[in-house]
Picture 1 (spheres, rainbow, N blue to C red):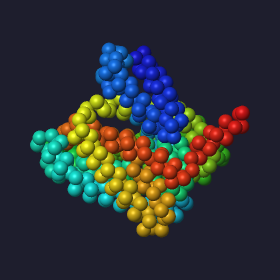
Picture 2: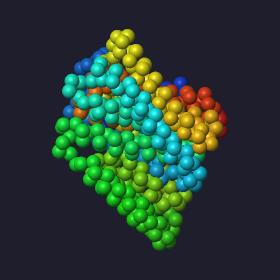
Picture 3: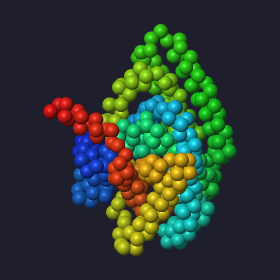
Picture 4: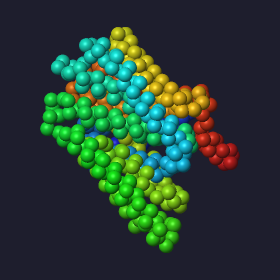
Length: 416
């Protein structure tokens, strides 16, 4: 317990410092928190002070650390889902549907084209062509839903038409990506005893029906029965229990607990007082205490020291170019075809190009399944970090307002 508390204190201080510096440099706090994790991980601290690193973060001690961080992420995605504006979604449904499809199809096709060259150079011995193409295509086409949500939250754009469309596109993208991932895992020899994909899809369909046609109407019925619009202590406990149960259900199905938490947020009653109460009571603990643990833990598992040599960096640049061109190109074309202006289309493409931590989760799954070699894994990690880092500069270049920074500047003026 003592070691866990020291680890949490260290991570929080490093995350706060790096997040503050990232904001000063015009980046999202998420980038600073990930880089902070890299600094205290094996790539930096592990090389500069290996004994300190081994004492502070021994490999066997990270289990509880990971559980806490994932709970924070589940609660955060529930908050994001609970604030989605249905009206904005209805207005943007054509853009969201087509952009989701195109932002998966384009990068997947480009990854399939590049897969042969990458496979003969960097794939482990014995990996089949189809599983490699599937995993590489997923890596290129996925959007980091939690990182995207965090960027939108920091810029106070999560309830705008652009933010709502981006969130829904990212949600659809990731559901498709996880479904493809399940297919890819079933094609691997070591996945032969796992639950068949057909049964997973049936369970997922049943889960969606229960959430949308039982839990959501039940929430509306409870609201009508309430004597007051105030969210009571007991009701908050029930809501959190449903969120955790929903996340557990999707994890058991084989999708991902994040989508269960997000769907629970979508089913949350749209009562302004309840939404405000949920955010007030949960946001501070989640954003300051739990989420930095998740971002830091992921950064600590990233080994940037594996890249060496001009040839490796050239292939890393090719991977990055294919990923950006496919993801942004597909989203921009889809947005233009549905009547969006070039500025909004480019902004949507930049947001969906954010890969970040969900990408790292997928890469770790592929690495553990021996689909990617350590070198290709590291190249794709660099791609994930760079595509996430360029999101904010592109938004600033396009003139997309940063309402979060405006609020901070206004508060500073009022204090002064």
